[in-house]
Amino acid sequence: MEINKDLFVKYAEIKTKIKELEEEAKMIAPTIMEMIDSTEEGRIESDFGKFSVMSRKSYKYSEPTVALANELKRRQEEEVATGEAKFTESRSVRFDSIKGEE
Image (cartoon, rainbow, N blue to C red; front, side, top):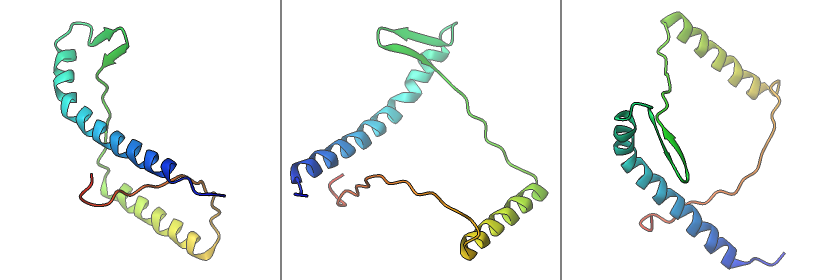
């Protein structure tokens, strides 16, 4: 198959733009959250969708539970090493930008 360099350039440009847009979205998210929180409904509807704030819980587990999790991880690593664990593999394109060009 002939390599189409233009496709690689386009892919790199898209991935770089996505990264830039995600950073921009992170910067404006706190202001949007404040605006949403100031409404009685807890959401803002627009012509292009609804905005609302969602919460996500994270937990800190007790020492006995952490010890069990560590033991499970150790056993999983052991099964991988012995070949007892079975795996599936998926493929995707990976792009690493040249440092300084981000």
